[in-house]
Image (tube, rainbow, N blue to C red; front, side, top):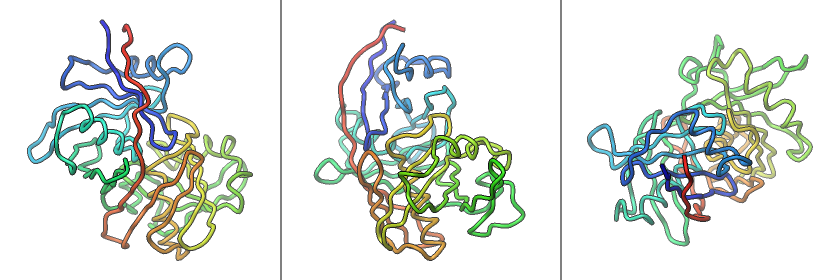
Length: 276
């Protein structure tokens, strides 16, 4: 069987997108892992599957698989690429769509210049819902990592994040500390580990070690989580420019109870097919 796919990226965070509406596709963790492999497959950080909605009042459903084959709840850069994909492939003529994900409904909106704005929903700070093992929902929490204490802010943007502030994001030991935080026992569903350097009150630099994918060039939900954490800690003012290794995102958040709005690009790289 030949599987048609589209290779896309959002700030270098790259995706294989599969249309399961126009084609018959049964995606499994093993197949997602095979397709994501950069040597023996197509290669990507995450694989996105476009499906018909399973509930009323939404336009599409999409599933997200990490490169290790694990299925996850949410992906910010993937949400922008998803919106670009369904419009460019003629699956909808809407510029604002409602999309069902494992973590709830998101609302991408296509803008001028190839940019996409996504309503990422209201951030969650309740430890039980992140999930994060803690007796309080304090904005600053201490994790014991490799014999040292690391101060993080735990937040869910539909998927769990642990954000820490660092002096120099380039010198931060992301490849060493990132996987230890990702698999920390206080995060029973694992976690995305964010390393944030504050440039000024409206600008940060960010690196993220993503759960199930490793460090990526950009992480949309990680950018949202970092900005939310910075605002809650009194370090940032909305909107915030987030500089990742792959490019820049704009994140706006009006405060507790309000949704996070993420704006950035989504790019189609090439179309292809592969024998599976």
